[in-house]
Length: 278
Image 1 (cartoon, rainbow, N blue to C red):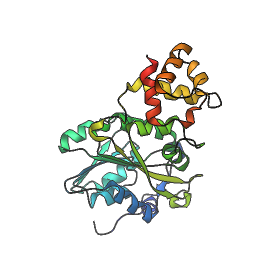
Image 2: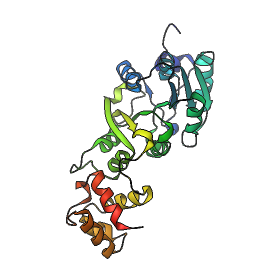
Image 3: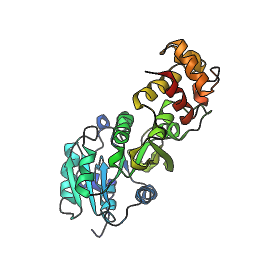
Image 4: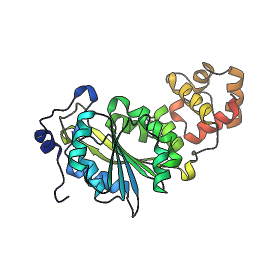
């Protein structure tokens, strides 16, 4: 492909407009494209799964460097454009599917290696898709996603800051997030009302979690701690667990119950989880 497509040109060519009901905003910032592809760190023989391929602008760029691109899209107009523009590309496979139900491990099995997953996540379902990917982390090498800037800031926030919350802890429990770049609203057509950011998340080696505790119990403890942010850790946890169990767990973890949830690290939450029981 001698010339890479642009969103504006494709929308004009097919006489289409972005659909608000689908949360469509098409990237036109070339710097952001370069940052995304670079963050994917695609090596020889690597496969890529792209979530929400849309008009195929990122898809085409990924197809220049990846051994194989599985382009997932569920909106019929976009599928038609993808097939017309990229259907003959030797390294691009267009798949009509929902990112929330797509079987990511199947790509790892076909590729014989862990694929990179990349995509511009629709704001309204970004969190469910992200945790779907983290659930499939044992079958994914790296995750590079565009998110609403506010959500990205919450994910990379440090303990003790106002942005730090359950989302920050739970993502770090499964992998290490890193800010790749920020993309202003003007980098899209049509321009959304908010800025965006690209994050790279590398799951822990072998798909292990950051700390060895029961996943469901860890999540229950973390969400209890942040459900009532103004309360002390002891009181917030006691709204979900028995007070005696909370006191025992805090004592065993050597954590002051007068602290608030937003001050605890992932490791400290893990120590509380170990002692609190089911």
